Amino acid sequence: MVSLAKVLTISKELLTPADILIIISAVFLSTWLYYFFWFDNNQQGKADTLLVQYAESLPQEYPLNQDQIINIQGHIGPSLIEIKQGKARFIHSSCRNQFCVFHSWLSVSGDTTACLPNRISISLKGTSSQYDAIAGRQ
Image 1 (cartoon, rainbow, N blue to C red):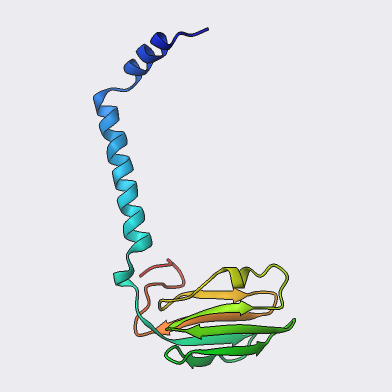
Image 2: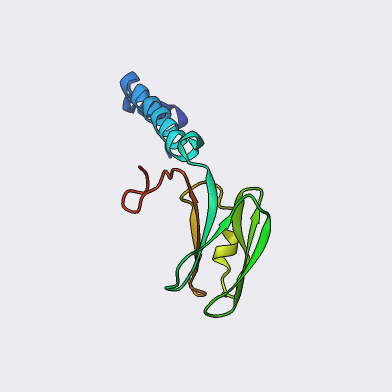
């Protein structure tokens, strides 16, 4: 059986002050990058229009400044989309797993979600979008 004193002695030999500095720097840098790229809402554009598209049809536009519930007949049944306080979301769909409903609110330009079994997608459009189709960000 290994004694506690021997484990502490081994750990002192494994980590030098330079190793500790590198670990602290990596944790700080990772935290900063996560915050900068995930939570920086200043770069995201304000949305003013909801685009609703069913299958291959042309998208329908709805203003985000009018609270309303939109009923769209999809491939397997109806879907309800709610617009409230400048945001939009699925509140009901005829699909089995309800992933589109669990996605929650779309709030900034470029946000998109879809109900794939029902062939309905919704996305927000505004004056500027932070996302592009290839890289995910501009």
